[in-house]
Length: 105
Image (cartoon, rainbow, N blue to C red; front, side):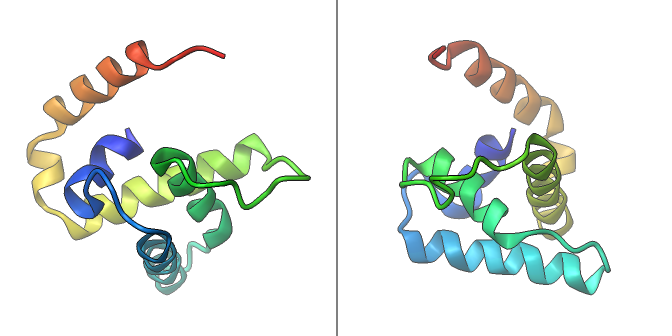
């Protein structure tokens, strides 16, 4: 879901500085709403989506932190792009399709 929502915003390819800037933007938006989120976990999710090396190589990120950060990204994109809600059926269908096609490890 996050990958589908990010494509219009960050494109299919972006650099590490773009990911860091977007992570900061998501975290700042949530701080102003008094919903703090760990921007490093946000960046970890973005790095995974875009194929960059992980930030956390020795200690795994707890699944709940990943869930909260992923929800923060979705909430931020929805709050800053009014077209998401109007196009939610396509977004969900695309996300389901991508999930079915992802390689299993």
